[in-house]
Image (tube, rainbow, N blue to C red; front, side):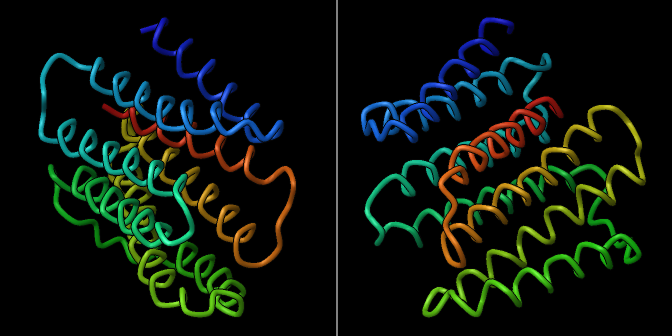
Length: 207
């Protein structure tokens, strides 16, 4: 397991290095490879393939597919978005497979407030991508709401890891969307990937 963590770290560093020195080989090889190592890490945890583990692993596989689509030309962006949307649906199924959907409305309020403000800013710049972005945002809203509600209901360490992963995923996607549609920052892509892989790592730890 420690060897896998080292591989995740080194692979991620090589991808981010590729971003800043504009080396396409490093970018194309080590972006999906880092996510693949995290999938192996998640698979290595626990003794059995529980329903939670299977659903989470399936979500991680769709995240890997999304990674690959987002490395391709612009016309594949929607395909990448759909892949991540499906990934979030599987994460939601994982979070709710044992106790059902969490209807803790009080925890929806801060999540809804954040997304309302962010979407209001974002959709002024998304053009023809507005509808896909809104649909994706609603799904990730449910994802983080369920993660937080699940932890409040069952404050255990593994459940906390799932919540941390969901929150970091939102931060990663928010920065990615702002950089893509509103204003580009030279440092954004590297920070996005650090947040994204840390999010996936915490999700893997929740197994």
